[in-house]
Image 1 (cartoon, rainbow, N blue to C red):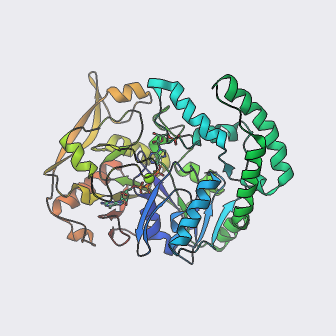
Image 2: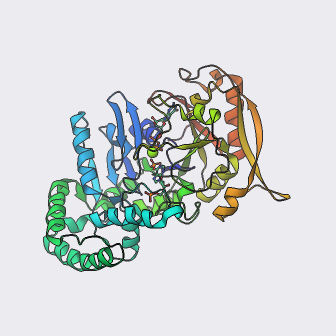
Length: 430
Ligand code: GDP
Ligand code: IMO
Ligand code: MG
């Protein structure tokens, strides 16, 4: 049962897309299982540089079937543009399927997301403003529209009539904005449905035939485990379950069928948006990590916001490994540390007179802990051309080994540059 989930194990942007791109040709199926176009996955390979938001990162392998799973929230306009851009770069999407059970992001979701953020004032979350939270809230309230609904004129009209009546009441009375036009949204989304129709399928039989045949399946995560709605730094989280449990739920695969969970960790930490970040850095050290001017600079793929940066936090890293059953670690962006004379890793938290080796659940408390650091000598030499772990400078080997020891999980891969080939495979992962 080679079902392998690739999950973000920090606050997102760990490099999940590039890891899936490396592994895709060994899989027969890649399933994106959650989130929406809040995600931005950068993939650099022989076909070019791609920033993808909804299409799975396995799309560059022509023999792999790619599925946008039932747990995803889809903005159809964004997806259509993404598909068109891929075509323009010569990428074939004939083997792309969209679950008819996936939810649709509607114009009122985007509006609500942006207005809610304004209303929150200094309590804002720093969302991507893409309508993610309201779309998931409506799904749970059972007033969502699913991709399959876009293909049925009568169903769409009936559901939209009822939903929009409620939404318009909310928009005019609470948010003090103008009503949205039923007619316009109906025609626009019907049109989206027509354009996407060839991709829409009941993906359950495709996935379960693959499971029966025992072929390798990759589950592609979006966001990161610390943004998880239940286990993340609530309320500074996204509105889905980006981890291994969410992978099962969003793809429609039982937990007993999952074979392995790869936790993707950056060799340091980044975060976009608000919320606690115990090891956050400012000033010169932050500038080195941010790599401004480089193609892989710490700037948000989706919103262009500057990412907050800091040292690797092993307390949080161990926590996300534990709550997700991570059994293999992929460390990315090791090369970013190449010029650092010394590197710090947070191994515990000090709070008043006590030491903690797990993160407190309260975000205010988490923002007040004092990190306890272990210091490592830097290696001060380039690593981007290295392809074998034993060829890495001994300080870099020791650093990666210690991260994995602190996380409590074996190493699988180390990436030393953003391109497909810039990877060191230490233990087989698929
Ligand atoms: P994702 O959302 O988890 O797929 O990650 P993003 O694509 O948003 O962010 C990761 C960034 O780091 C992208 O700009 C990648 O091109 C880049 N990247 C990934 N792995 C490496 C690496 O090993 N070294 C360097 N320098 N950049 C990397
Ligand atoms: P990938 O898949 C980094 C963050 C937002 C914000 C919070 C809630 O590229 O790793 P939302 O729009 O989801 O309601 O915003 O979550 N966030 C991400 N940060 N990478 C992502 O995705 C993210 N998706 C959401 O910045 O703090
Ligand atoms: Mg990203």
